[in-house]
Amino acid sequence: MATIHYELQKVRNGHFYFKLKGIHGEDILSSETFSSKASAENAITFARYNAPDEKNYELKQSTDERRYFVLRGKNYQILGLSGPYSCDSDARRGIKEAMECAATMEIMDLTS
Image (cartoon, rainbow, N blue to C red; front, side, top):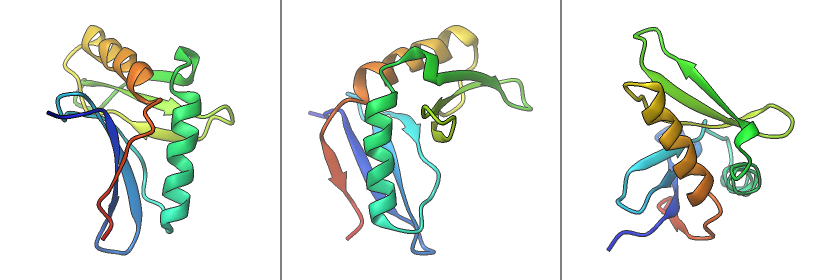
């Protein structure tokens, strides 16, 4: 059975990023890449803190007219981006899911 968690991953260039995974293993939110593991872990802490507040989300439209959302910190720095959605209502449901799931303390470290 899947659980809500953050996945901490390392990419080929040695940088790190995280994904917030939903109850069914779906990607809810992905971060930018960070030069250190500690920075990525710190970003998870900020995501946990900022995600429950709907004011920290911005609904956007991509060039192909699909919707996505951005989670920002109190300083307006981008903490994470969603994947694409076909309509506003689906993207808003994604925001609600992020708000509910982001407080999880579960981190799956896949950097080894």
